[in-house]
Amino acid sequence: MRRLDARPVRVGAEEILAFACIRDEALRLPWFLEYHRQAGVDRFFIVDNGSRDGSTDYLLAQPDVTLYYTEDSYSSAECGLHWVNELLELFADGHWSLTLDADELLFYPGCETVALRALTQYLESVEADALQTMLLDMYSDRSIRATSYSPGEPFLNACPFFDADSYSHLPSCSVAVRGGPRERVFWRNHDWEYPAPFLPKVPLVRWRAGRVYEASTHLISDIVPAELTGALLHFKFFGDFPARAALQAERKEQFTGSRIKVSTSAWSRQCVIYSHVLSQDPELTLFYDRSVRYRDSLQLVTLGILRMPESYRVLVESGVGLTD
Image (tube, rainbow, N blue to C red; front, side, top):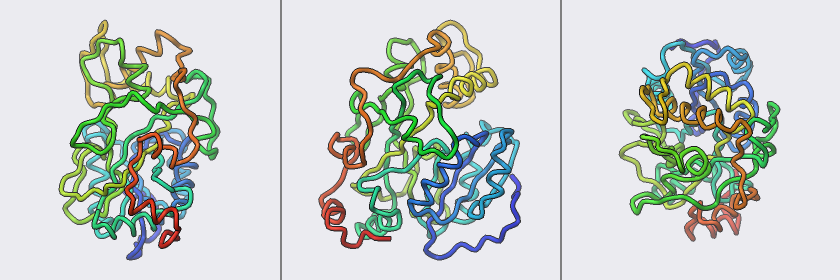
């Protein structure tokens, strides 16, 4: 992994940082960056894993991005986890740090008016050093292939729908564990030997030296999570998805009948499944009669997808102490 930009890195004491590992994300990067800038991220640290679609040049032109590059194996780096952990260790000690994929946006109760810095101040006030979230898959009312999206457009313009039910929970976890449209469409009624995607993530953490993510951002030890929860709105299902899934499946997997024979990572296993199901129904849509159109973050609280304790609700409704 080598640094590509030559800009000096002087991280201010109160800066909120974001970290990501990407490959060929030119379609999503403009809004991914802009959304999180508006939310309150001060600086981005990004690892580009061999992009060929112009992502590298685009990121080099961004004044708030520190860019690293590698063509080493993504799978051998545990889906980029080793690279991101290295950057967190170098730059994030003492900082609130957000670790994301380029198709994820952080939402939390009141995020339309509550800046990210105000959220972190609240977390500190309740002696929490992490925000738990669930992946909330977003989709359109058209087929996946017909879901058009233009760079820089808000993701919700293209994919405003989600599943409000069909999630499973564990008593030990404050957010849904599995379910949603991926399980409903790609796993249900199929005899796969691997389970549907695991939904909990811990993307926002007050970092300290020696801390590491252990399985993407799904697992991190020695944290004190808040009772408040958030969601990573997940925008994987634009029109480019079938080709991306097929490419990954062809690159990494062998498929025989209804069983996966060889796998190198959870994402690769999933891509074999996505590609197979899409090949059976090229006009596949995730939309169904119980799909819900996203309105705002408090809608997710009402539906039971997000958890908002009374201490936070009072602050959101009063606006006291929640300005950036």
